[in-house]
Length: 194
Image (cartoon, rainbow, N blue to C red; front, side):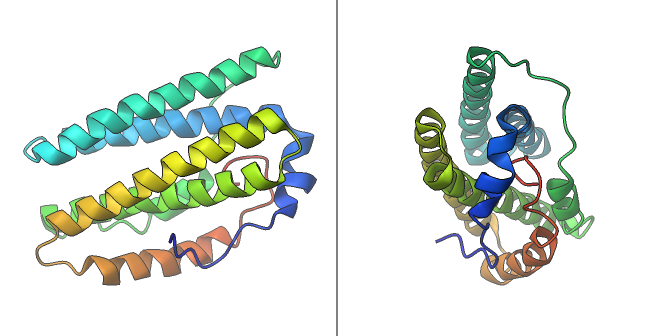
């Protein structure tokens, strides 16, 4: 369904993640906060698109609820949130967004950029849910995998709805090709996209 070209090696969980759960959870918490911020940015940039505004309000609320749940898990395990981490994967993907080119191109690219992050997060959560040696986290990441898949589908649906001049399927293929190049440099760190 996600059409990602390069799957995450399950050994990432065994060899990297399980040795530093605190780092993964801290990074994950900030990913949820950034997803909420992205939804708010889409509202600010597109106040005239009521359907986008409504969807992003719901998304921002859900992402902040996920942030709280991850933070609660950190606290339950005796950890603290820690400082925000840079998400180099997302920053590299951001370079692919069209700057200029009119409002439609900017909107569609922002929606597809968001869909890509949700797709990769969904895929990583699936790998975590299937491979982590921690029943509570396995169940948690399975639940979030389903949520991320819904978010991915919503962003694609909104892009197709608001595209007039742009071939969304063609542009999505370009995003997939670019992401395949970017993700080759990741999968070695104890971060959601790392």
